[in-house]
Length: 375
Image (cartoon, rainbow, N blue to C red):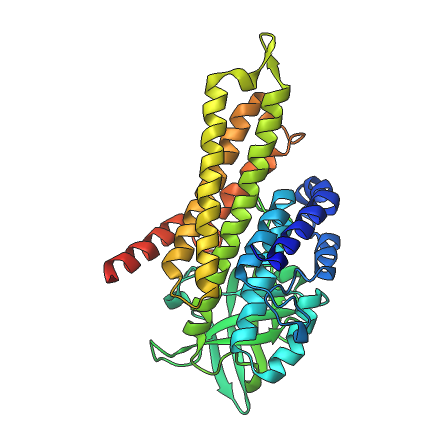
């Protein structure tokens, strides 16, 4: 690690222990957006890690972002999911593809946390695939009229900005475009907030656009650049999801280890039982493997190398490790692991969601196989 990366990690760890973790249970139970935690992290620059200082960010890299996200997720996975969306699905795509006017309009506000964003890709029938987008953007004078519906839009209930993917032409290759749409635009309506299994504080809902007019300068990357924007954003999103997964797994492992040392059975700590020791050994090994895959993907992205296979591997292994470790943590705690009084129950639910959001495990395997077969 560089000194800057290490400093960011340590700041995130301190904030997670001091401010974020103590609120995590209430955020989960109340399905409450963790606004205070988000604002606290924003003051430390963690809502715009890779954004240059001139635009209000820290000017660091993706590796730094993963270090920060793991620490935040170890305290509250919902908070980490929100921070991941803001950094990797909003700020970085705007930084890479935005015009100077777009950067000036949005990046300082997003990096400071005074504005929040959401990423509207998934549709009910088309899923999250490139070819599944049916939302239409029709030319109208010096702008576009958008019509369509999006599902499972994380942060939609609190967002000020929506990145919307819509079809602008019948061209299969260049017919998809991305738009920066203010959330208060006429014709945008939200469905009720989802009552989710996990990541419950990362509030989400459906989003419908009905004859929503936006100017042409809202295009991100230009008309027909949607596939390139989306590919870049999804690679970042998978890295973020992997880092969040590692943080969840680490929190579950730490809770299980502490419990095993303190809980006695037949006059000795259960940590002395070989079956428990094997479980803890496997948990720790799996977490290190997932973390290293996440770092590799982040470092490759920072180096400008092709990363889609790396990001899919990191997300696949990270999310499945989180589920495995959280499940084993519940097993170590036994009946107590099933109670909401103990955090491992929340980690178990949060971990399961990581296997689904930002692309399911099955989708990641397809992407990895596709990359392998092209080699």
